[in-house]
Length: 346
Image 1 (spheres, rainbow, N blue to C red):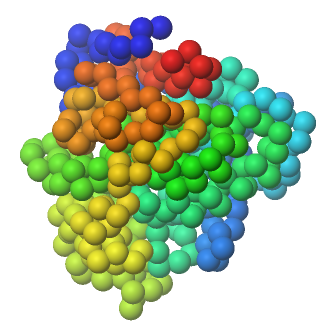
Image 2 (tube, helix red, strand yellow; image 1 turned 120 degrees about the vertical axis):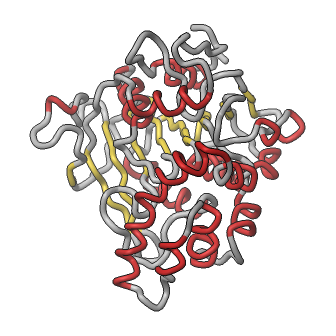
């Protein structure tokens, strides 16, 4: 494998590597079984699992809609002593996201157990509370980690986070320090470690204003309409409906509902970049320099990270792109990159 990602000639820059990579890539579909865990504040988090010798690998081998997670009573599996990967998805993502399907299928074919941890409200069912998820919710990560270690108590655990999920994971690792050493290693992909820079970036330019932001708001606003029906005194639906970008949305919902003054206060206090120096386990931070979501000048440098962190910043890749091959292309480079890092091959 060439560690320096090289895009196909027909995907020459960051926008195409991002958009085409997410919409047209070929990847196998993996079957998931769902476990619901309760949070200390009375909410729930859904975990989508595939464990060797417990679950079929491919979605096509199951009944019902392809790759639709199925409810299941989750019992501990103490006999599994292999490697296991937990994946934290990006903003408005899920176990059905292209990168989640691709990464989990590729690791599962290598004999790993895989699990996608959904942020609140992202598993296809509204969460119970007025609050939702945000990019600094390390308490929910702690809740997830405890559940994983209970389900597979003898597994060798690894963690990965994509985009927003990567920021939460990195922040968790920094806060935990050596207490996170039950993880053998971790990785973040296309992660905005400076949320202010990324939030402002997505409010500018043609693609930010008319492609990426509407893509997110298309699913975020309907969730708020549903919440407003249940909690009319706590959800300012008029201002949410009027939000034109993520800053305005976070100003009137995500920030205040989670205890922040506004979007800038939320983004500033939840950015992982100032805390990366405190990470104590082997961690890969992978960012393409042409990521249209993340200004190049906001990427972390060696001065920002501890000695256990490896920065990999290829020139190309877009935002969670890293596609390969001829049209319609494949997504194998990303999973191979993470696998090589986890196996100690740099």
